[in-house]
Image (cartoon, rainbow, N blue to C red; front, side, top):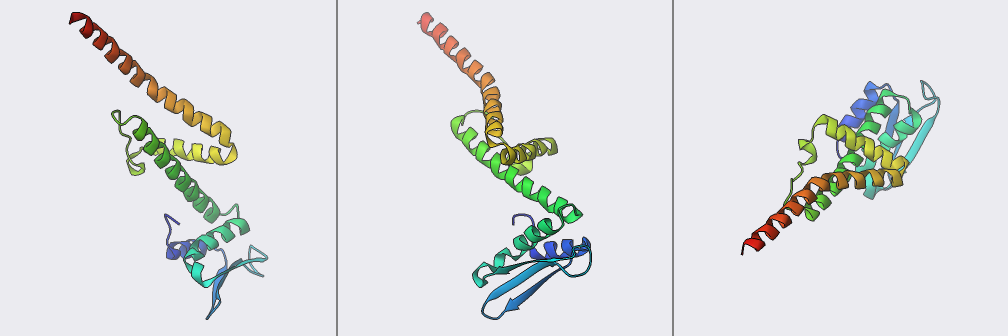
Length: 169
């Protein structure tokens, strides 16, 4: 859960008027649930978390709330953050590989250094990767090819200059 603390998840659930709860068992982990017999949900979605996995409580609450109330403000807020996390991972992999392939060329900024427009493009690509992986991979390949074209032109120019220099010797 890269962006959210348990406190933030609980505050967001409360602000979205989504009923939820947690109950601990002294030697058996915790149960968490979203919904209830009353209110907008009409039913409860529950999940048991083992004691060695308690650090996942926030993620489980997010997952249950999005399942329970997919059209809620909460679901939209946390789905967007999840898409941004995926996009950041995709960008980081791409950036690392690009910089390894072309170490002498432009070094791309970190995720935090990207413009909002660039982040938006990466988020769209990450979502597309979930929906149609082959198409998204082809899009990344085309992007790399486009970025390499000017570099290859510079390499060709350097070779031409070397050939010209060699002739003068």
